[in-house]
Amino acid sequence: MVYVTGFRCFKCGKHHLPDEIENKPIPRCSNCNSGLDAEYDYDSIRKSLLTDPFKRASPTHWKYWAFLPVRDLSNIITMGEGGTPLLENDSLTKDIGCRRLLIKYEAMNPTGSFKDRGSSLEITKAMEYGKRRVVLASTGNMGASVAAYAAFAGLECIVYVPNIVASAKIKQIKAYGAEIRFVDGDYSQAMDKAEEYVMEHRDSFLTGDYPWRGEGTKTVGMEIADQLYWSVPDVVIAPVGNGTLIWGIFEAFNDMFAVGIIERKPAIFGVQVDACRPVVDAWENGVDDIIAVENPQTVATAIACGDPIDGLGALRAVRETGGQAVSVSDAEVIEARDFLAGNGIFVEPSGAVAYAGARRVSGVLEGKTVVCMATGHGLKDMWGIE
Ligand SMILES: *Cc1c(COP(=O)(O)O)cnc(C)c1O
Image (tube, rainbow, N blue to C red; front, side, top):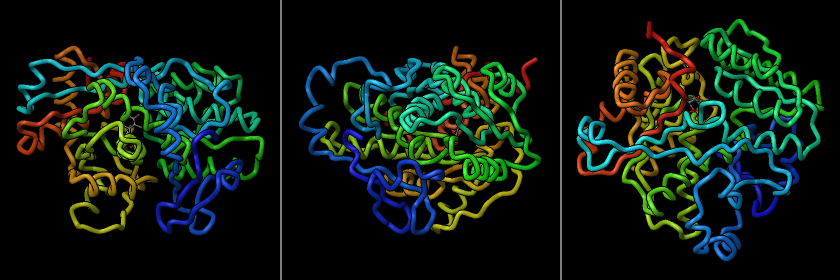
């Protein structure tokens, strides 16, 4: 791996060398089984990367390769993910009442959600390790994304799907030729199945909210600064499902700060829905315990993660940046979805959650430059549109 020096455990802080993590069927801490965070050689990145041509090159996912844990850049699997627009119009800015309101429109990725950033890296790793097949649990978008990249790279793909997934997403997964296995249970139970499978089949690569995906997701944060000519917004607002997106954004700003390409960091706000708000509860109560919600029901199916894998990461992102965690109702989500669509920006319900959150906290956004994540395409789930 080019600039990766190791992986540190979120919880106990244990450091792992890259070789210890490579080829572990389930990449978690060898001491306490928690999530891992990649660490980089920032001095080398600073010396070799931060040139004028780098700063001026158009933003794309792989532009930020130095911050991704890959071994060999000549073998990356890419379908042109990233480089998504940062959209701004008067009507949205007026609606929120801040200085500038920008929408990072992740629907423009190859399969219609930001998940493609993580998938591009994961499938690159699966190929590096010589695997035959990728396996994951998904609420829909990750399954569609991994299925597409696996098909593109010539790998088999098995997707464990819980009982809440929107039917258009099932069709999208099927279209890419993946095998779908329905699980009578929620997302956490689907994840257990995927992990069991890779323990029994060592020619398979586990994808999902593990370190590779988190690292791949960072590039969305890097693009935000890049698209603002390497300045930093005051606030970034993201929906929180498993917490991987918000953690990736937090890490992106930390990485950029560490190499000196930005001079400050934004406050990061996390938004959940009322029916599934374990991170918001922990934040409000000032505790580290994330209490799982069983079988959550909401229109925002992509964030119905009752036991968020990167929940602690999401909490840290909000706490360490002076952000907030808030929840919104399903009705507010649909109103936000309709308002965005009325401004030409069509997202699925989960894709409108951050915007609904911006409306909720608009009082504290006055005078600020705010970026809202619009995470998935409206065509994926047209809930309530007749
Ligand atoms: C996956 C997803 C989310 C939530 O992201 P996490 O990384 O699980 O927090 C939000 N919106 C959409 C459309 C998604 O596909």
